[in-house]
Image 1 (cartoon, rainbow, N blue to C red):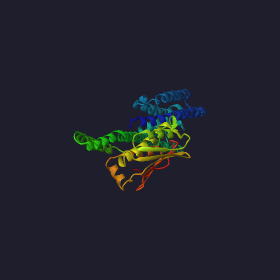
Image 2: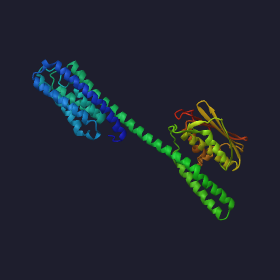
Image 3: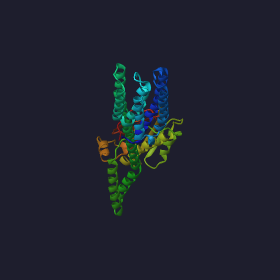
Image 4: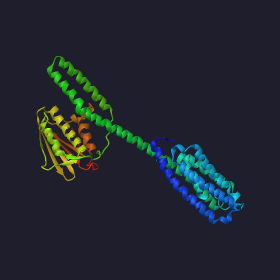
Length: 390
C-alpha cells in the first residue's frame, strides 16, 4: 500500500465522497424500514438496529476523515457491523424475510474496504457480505441474485479504480519532482556558463598569451574548465516548458540599452520610441539571452567587434535580433560544442528561450551571424519549439 502524500490525498478525496454516499444510503434504509414497518416481527428490535446503523454512520464519517484513524480495526469493525446487521435481519423481521434491515447501507463498508485495500479488499468485503446474505435465505430469487452480483463485481472494480488513481498520483508526483530537479540543474548550468566558465576560459587564454607563471595558471584554469564542463554534461538537460509567473512590469528597451555601456563587444541597440513593457522576470531572461549571444561575438569574433541589437513589437510578441559581421559558424560546430559540454547555446540561449515559450532562429554564413529571438508577452503562450541555435 502506498503511503506517499499523493496516494493519501487520493484516498482522502474518495472517502469524502463515500461519506456523502453513507448518509444517502442511511436515509434510504430509514425510509424503507419505515415504509415496511409492518414487516417487522419485533419492531423495537428493528428500531434498535436502525439506531445502531445511524450511530455508526455518524462515527464512520468522522473516523474516515483522518488517515491516522483509518486503521485495520476501523475497517474490520465497519465490515463486522454490516455483516451483523444482515445476520440479525431474520431475528427482527421473522421467518418470512424479503429484505434485510440495512439494505444498501452495507455499501459503505464495502466501498471503504475497496478504497483502502483496493481490489483485494473490495473482493473480500463483497464475499463476506454475500456469504452473510446467502446464510439467512431459504432460496435465492432473481432480485437476491442481482444484488449479490453487483456486490461481487462492484467491490473489486472500485478497488481497482482506487489503486489506479493512487498509482497515477504517485507517478505524477515523482515526475513533477524529477522535472523540477532537472529544471533547476539546467538553470544552474546556465549560471555556471554565464559566469564561472567564461572567467576560466578568459584566464586560460590570457595566461597563455602572457607566458611564464601565468601560463601555468592558464593551464590549471583550462583543466578546471574542462572538468566543470564534464560535470555539467553529465546532468540531464531536461527543462520544463513555460515561463515563470508574471511579476512587476518593466521596459525591455531600456534594459537592452544598458548593454551599450558594457566594455565588449561594441553594441548598438535600436528599438521603438515607446516603452516595450514586459514582466520584469521575463526581461531578465531575455537580456540574459542577448548577453549570451554577445558573449559569443566577443569569444568567436573579437572583443571589440561591432554587434547590433534590434528590438521590435509584433502583436502579442517581441522580437529581438542580434547580429554581428564575423566569419559565421562552421557547419557542425554547434553539435560539436554541445558534445564537448559547451552549453552557451544549449542552455544560455536555447534553454532560456524555450522556457519563455519562444523561438530562437539562427542565420549564419560569410555575412556573419544573426539571431532572431521571438518571445510571447504572455507567459502562458508558446510560439512553438526553439529553432536552430549556435
